[in-house]
Image (cartoon, rainbow, N blue to C red; front, side, top):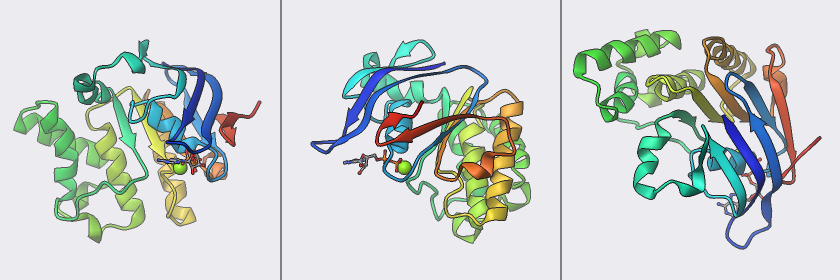
Length: 217
Ligand SMILES: Nc1ncnc2c1ncn2[C@@H]1O[C@H](COP(=O)(O)OP(=O)(O)O)[C@@H](O)[C@H]1O
Ligand SMILES: [Mg+2]
């Protein structure tokens, strides 16, 4: 599903964030990308939805070479995946339900079907009773649940998540890890970056470790 061939990435004129990364992630895998801060985890994740382009090498997703995608096709193409990135992306004045409706509106669902799907997604992450709340009123764990619901409401086959348990206490982080495992069981391919691999140790995951931009053997 995801293939990296000899990928390097240099941001601006900085040092190489990724160097000769070659890897393959198959459909149905639950992969944990680990490594210390600065190892290149975010750089790697961001290449998959083509938020960044590789400096050299090739990134293919679902058989498509991301370097061949036209700019105008990118928003449509990104809908194949659910994204949870590190940058804050919740709108303080839009309700929990609104956040989950947005991807469905963009995908062209009618009001009734969108409502039904949005509530089903909130139910799956245990947020149905918070649908009218605004993000600032949510706990860190609830905010992360909302991000997961929003990423998965249009039922993509692939979920990418960058440090989804950062800033959570141990109990909340464990709950979020369990939620990822639930979605994996439902058939979602998951690639997540974390510096805290222990949180995912109760689950059968594939581990890929990065260090200074290289995949450790
Ligand atoms: N937008 C950017 N501009 C310049 N350097 C960057 C940028 N993003 C990341 N880097 C650098 O690339 C390296 C890898 O960073 P990153 O991929 O964010 O690692 P991680 O997510 O594992 O902490 C670091 O040295 C970082 O400083
Ligand atoms: Mg990062």
